[in-house]
Amino acid sequence: MTALVLIEIENGKVRQASRSAIAAASRFGEVDALLLGNTGAEAASTLAGVRKVLHVPTLTHALAEPTAALLATLAPSYSHILAASSSSGKNILPRLAGLLDVQPISDVVKIEDESTFIRPIYAGNALATVQSSDNIKILTIRSSSFDPVAESGGNASLEVLDAPADDGKSRFVKLEQSQSDRPELEVARVVISGGKGLKDASNFHNLLEPIADKLGAAIGASRAAVDSGFAPNEMQVGQTGKVVAPELYIATGLSGAIQHLAGMKDSRVIVAINIDPEAPIFKVADYGMVGDLFEILPALTKAL
Ligand code: FAD
Image (cartoon, rainbow, N blue to C red; front, side):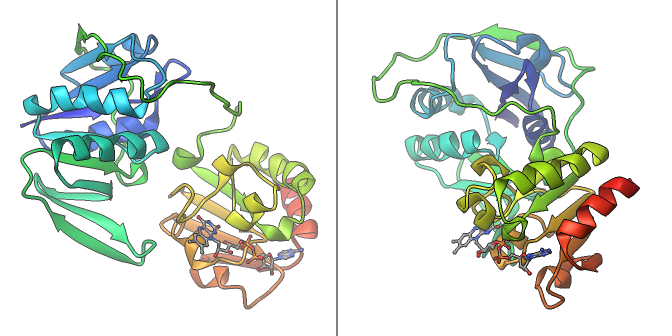
């Protein structure tokens, strides 16, 4: 069996989520990587555990329609096709599954064997064991559940492929990307999140950023905080946001709604700061501080 992993590049490096997908794919046998766009070839070819990099330099921006069409032409050579459970992976792989008429299996957190996979359902409140009888298995992988392969140490061969003919169904317009020196939210070792209790965007900036700087943490947010304009969409943690499992998750001024817990309850240590001792977040917290975040956060930052 050979698996193909669609990898994503950020700032010339292979995203950690893609390296986790490669680690998952190595459970099936040999692993090839599909790289799109004109950067990242060197980074991809040194990835540990990759046999061959299929590089399509002219297919830029990973538009879902041509990428799925390309993957469909490559699919007969592979037993499994994987991508990270990212916006891009979840945009492309279901289309590929549609083209191949197979059932995609999303958010895989554990691989039992080559056709049996475990994935969360009901906002993470239950785990389903899914067995697939399809000839080609199409999987998206939760990065927090698989340790990533190393960025170096590999020596994959490089094969350059042509992009498929443009079907004219979609075109790239522009990319709006926020720049940040902080770690990626989904793979950060420490995450500090703010909720509606932060009261406005300036408090995210003035209270969360200094402590995140001290801890080398990524900043997350509840959906209520995002909907209120306190934080950008890409910071949302939860069922309809990002799923994180850091070593330390600090939840400040957020109540701990079930949809938020779905995105962070697998964190190793959870610290909750909330003024309401009855807030549901305390049920999942390892450490709780009952009090006003406007007093606790500056004191904590100073102490750190
Ligand atoms: P609130 O519930 O309003 O809680 C604010 C908290 O701040 C309270 O507990 C309060 O005691 C505390 N607080 C207030 N002032 C202070 C202070 N001075 N000091 C300390 N604490 C203070 N939510 C998500 O987060 N992520 C998702 O992905 C998500 N997906 C959803 C999907 C669906 C289909 C639905 C229906 C909902 C989803 N939600 C999601 C929304 C979720 O149900 C909650 O509404 C949301 O998580 C609440 O956000 P919050 O905890 O910030 O706000």
